[in-house]
Image (cartoon, rainbow, N blue to C red; front, top):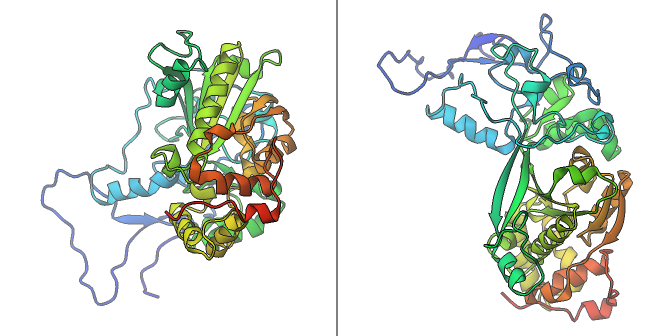
Length: 444
């Protein structure tokens, strides 16, 4: 320990390491923004500090209270972590390198949602939404009573409109599978959508309850397994909301968003977990891109019937195991004795990662509750985990739509047969264990 003290909850100069010269102030002119020369520790609650409480699940946003994670409002911060998920680390790099002024205040003029979504009854049920802030798209309207110069309340959701162009849609138009209507689907094959980007906002008591664990255990393990990155998890029991440094979710709404909550109109949904190799680059080792495109097709058809379609795209690469782990598993599958086989599909993942899946679909239903979904007429998914998460959350599923066999890529037969054998929805039965061993992929 050095004799220099860093006060908890107060400002203090950073001490030099023993044996190093004391840093001298830089008095030369510099075009770069000034960087702070002190640190503030909030790892323990200061006796004089009073943060705004967050009454999670309150119907009135003023009663619920704002989520304040901005570093411009240090004394008012009432959450653990910072905004922008994993991109918060890049913000730190920008500040450290001098290209971003840490005191910059976002000018949010004309950034409000182009479409109003909600509020819905589910927003005021603390058990239905625990992993996002339902009021995150409209902080200015919801919390306009707070002085913006003192309380830097930032959006965690952004809603806009776009035209998206997917080559397969043009093919489906040419084949007569899709019809151009000029409003939803344009003659050039572009699709008009409403889209929302959602950053994660975790209510720790609700999250623990959802996962059936004690809140303290959740806090302790989050603290330890992130390399002690967030000490407030274990030192600030008064802070109940966590902004985790993970990827968020994007929602694409096809058709009129108002149709989502109309019980007389059909609704199609596909919840899709990120797969960069297939979704972007067309890798044929899995069914991800073709199933995603088929989901979009079903959503378009449903919207053209007067209903709506929803694509929920979650940043959970490689079943939330990460792309490095995914590629290691690919190598293990291809090189194992007997080659890439459906009967060993999940085993190789467990050998590398220790677990088959870390997506925690229990949290996935939150975004559907945020949209006001109560019934899904066409669920474009074979996943038993997604189906169970949706139905256990109280939403009705009328029909499940599997991927058409002709859309399964040649090298993805291993994946699809293994998943069906593991409990995925199937309309054409499940292979025996012996038959699974005969379903093989190519070497590479």
